[in-house]
Length: 153
Image (cartoon, rainbow, N blue to C red; front, side, top):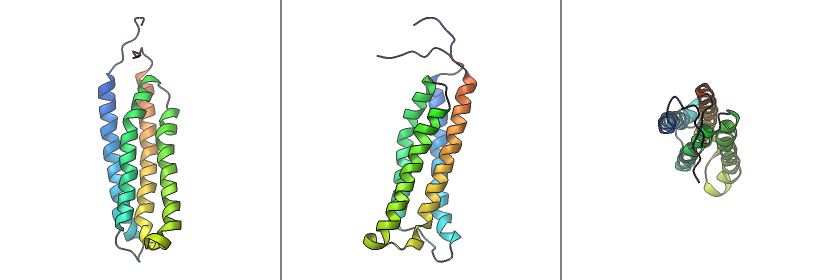
């Protein structure tokens, strides 16, 4: 590796900061959706346990995807991969959850459609938070500029 520009901060601090930011944003989005989603609709006052499990499963999956995306962004300072590799999968999986719960929930799981408003809002807010987070990470990484990143292996 040739001598080049040194990054203004190291990769570990970059990943730690933005992983912590996503953990907080994702958790708040999930909790707000599950708590206030049913209350915005007058017939339902709670989220069923299956909605809670699915919302937190999506959040946990995004928390596992976050470090992988941050490693990729550190090596390539483009903002497009952050949105493509993080926000889009969360949106697609969330949309699949909504369609499955709308079609299978009332028939087989005995979950009324009016009880799914918490899941709907949680997935929507999680997707919106992932878009905002992705844009923030992309902008922050572009501001760091280009530098030599060691390749391993």
